[in-house]
Image (tube, rainbow, N blue to C red; front, side, top):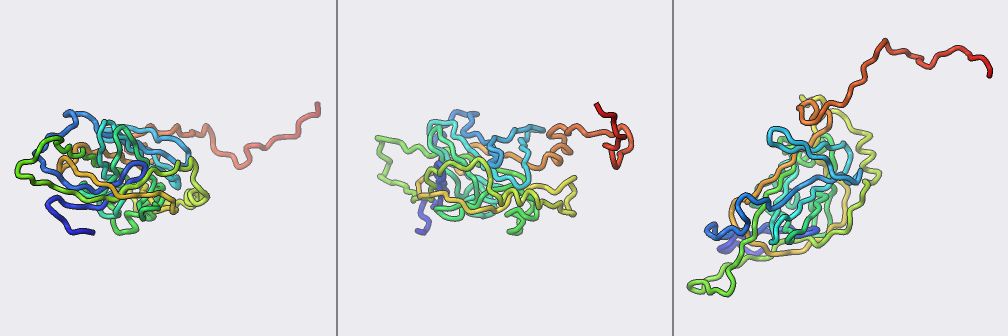
Length: 286
């Protein structure tokens, strides 16, 4: 990779839109989005059931219920008429580089009014490793020595720097940014997971060290899937993200214990349980 110049250079990827680690621009430039407007929206799609997960809100935070063993994708939509950069993390880990997540790292560049579906950890310009809900010990973050931030999906959104057109820059000075890795539109994702996901769900175990009623969920490093990528260029309008979105996830039982989702109705026995509830005498013939 070429050495840094006046504007820092980073690697970027694109999958369904573009994945980018873009250069910072001068913070004195005007920000193009109206104040208070939303640049992007985020939801979580359960690939095993083929449905978007319901979002619950409590104390200003957003939550979804994850099913152990199910594969999922993070869907990000650009709500503006210009490109945006979405630096995305899962369990405190950047989904592109595998680094401990920071907003100044690589992310997805999403075209105006477009969207991207991020279904796994980026392994190369052609493949990803599928996200799936799993117990804490099996999560990618825990397996790489970073178990402390499992259970959260984060997106730091940046506006793109708007270069003034038909105007000459004083002194003729000009700043440059190099290409970033970008992923090409991915093929439609399957609505159901393969047999591996079902096997993971059936072998789910409870970690005895967790304080929650059941083991906290994390995200695993799953099966390899095709996901093409290419290099793009993106220059951030500001050093800090214009919007930060976060969605926490866990098992239904754990979120119910926190008061995020309602408790499922519990079965209350009216009498002592019977070992042979179907015991009867022989009836008369009809």
